[in-house]
Image 1 (tube, each protein chain N blue to C red):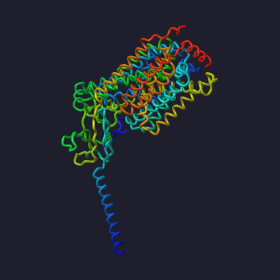
Image 2 (tube, rainbow over the protein chains, first blue to last red):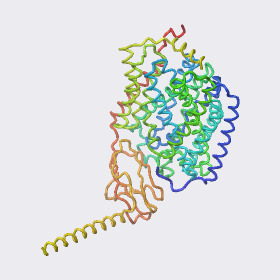
Image 3 (cartoon, each protein chain N blue to C red):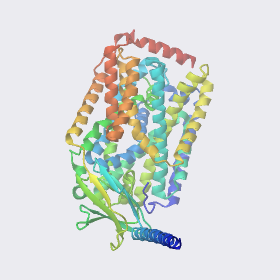
Length: 482
Length: 151
């Protein structure tokens, strides 16, 4: 990483902010989780999450370090299209709304997205799906752990390893104490902090610098950022949209919420979350366009958001950014820890290693897996391998290749395992190929297109005859044994 | 025999002198260019790229459309070790590091060629995106799942 010569905040201020919020999250984790004894209570918040908490948790989880740091980065690199393209990630949430309702109806006692793929397409498709999903989850966790360490280091001068360790330890701590209930509760507070912080920074950016100054600065120094015919930006637009859809459709982070929401809540919660989330990347991205007007040197593109905020607002801005990004990171890391742990416990431990395990045993194993995931993430973050952050872009091809197998599997009886397997394998391969030959901004698009073609051709040549009732009956039986 | 020995000694002395001169010249060059600027030669299809450097003193980063740096612009001056360039139109851009006062050139030349993807290619991917997106929308919002779901 190319470094700034000076940290913006004093390290003691950084430690104070981290300590205050760490104590708050841990306390809330303990408070909300103190009665979660049963497995369903611990991993799915008792399946009784209402609309307000449901909306907040979906929105806060989708506001990751990627939103607060990569949206400004993309605006700086691809201008107007980068900013708008990133906000199209909201479409994934909006399109998951009807899926959430259907998932809840089809699998009222389900636990994971892996459950669905296994029952719908069989073991081969399920194992391919698990590889994609677990690699994606781990890549996401590692990129956020690293982002936390880097950001804290840049803002406060606190060494990378300390910052990264604090963030991971706190998230593991309160997820362990409170389970999914704590994740959802803290997400609600974190969502409010993120929204208020961003709105404050954007208003001050416009007031301090002014729209006209920003526009003329761009026109003089970085003119292509204002061009609607910027080719890479045009290519990026649908790529990011499909990447977002792929991330949400396949990931257990979103399926576990669909299972946790009260019947009838999922569709509305995801719709509201999508509408609330859409402006966030635009606001965050807009801030980056002030760089020429502020005559600011940006050593590394992913630092642009925090740097502009700190330049405009000084110490207050830096503290605000620290609180906001700490919230964004926590709300995503805790969700990933919770959702990935149940995927590991249900789809790997119970299905492959201990089929007869009871609920109490699984509850204990879930806690161990949360700690294990935290340690593994820490170990992968510690060497600070910067290419791991780029790994997340890689996953675009893989996750986008799951869009059609998942969506067709939920809505079309004729969709079968041949289409799902070839779709995921060939879609991923084509996406990765385009990543290397053209650029990261087409990998998900190509992956989704090839996967869609595979699913459609297979439906035509070898149509399946899946019976939805079978899915539900099998799933109910499994829920009962758990 | 004696003559051959003298010649061999002379050859060895010549070789040593050449090696010494080459080393001194390399050292002098290195001293004249005490900073490294990366990437040295790069093509961008997006109009953005990152320049990174290592230097032991404050520097200024200078950009010029020509190799002679007659029409040069100072992009940055200070102790940071990188600079992100974006929003560049098609063209060839040259960069180098200079001392903070601009009197000494500290690095070798870095040359970046910006050649954007063609608009036809961009619109082709855009159209592919529209097709996949509309088809996915249709699948989710207009396909009615089979009736046996309620059975």
